[in-house]
Amino acid sequence: MLKSTYPNPLVINLSIDTPNDPSPPLEFQTNGKLAEKGVNVTEQSNIDQLSSRGYGTIENKILTLTFFETLYLQDKGMLIVKNDKNTPVDFQTILHAYQAIDENAWVNYLIYRDLRSRGYVVREGFGTKTEFRVYERGTYGKDSASYLVLGTQEGKPTDVNSLADVLQQCQNQKKELVLAVMNRRGDIVYYSVAQLAFK
View 1: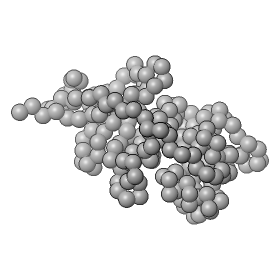
View 2 (view 1 turned 30 degrees about the vertical axis):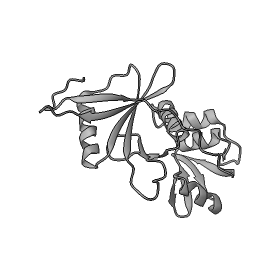
View 3 (view 1 turned 180 degrees about the vertical axis):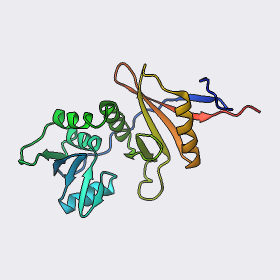
View 4 (view 1 turned 60 degrees about the vertical axis):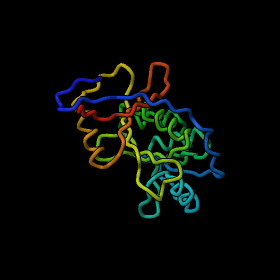
């Protein structure tokens, strides 16, 4: 049990989940241009297919993939990334670009990859200092995200009061807060975070 200054203590319960078989690969390959905060895709047919599967955001007929989405799709062989000189960009170059704007880039990518491999649709987090929104299988486009995921590494200090603030915001949105921890072996372990009220 974690101690905090909040009236009710926080309880973190270990949630063990066995990955499902990976989703079938997308039956297409598309090209994207490296941009400041991700990769832009302009091929309309591929934009539709990517968007329907929960990848990227569309604005002015351009779909922009986040860096973690880009790394995942490139690793799967579904995306070829090129720079403004039309030269192919490799995985490490994209990762370095991601690390330039997010010091937790590698951890976040591994969490994203793990959740996607379990069959979940994973979107970028917002408003609660969480990395990801996670949708129950089969609910994307029909319902809102069920989980908000906060990522960290084993051994890295976590401020309990900040965690309690995030938990309160998640509860206000009727979402479940999940703490995703990358252990020293590089595996991702998930913890459900909840507030316990003694009667």
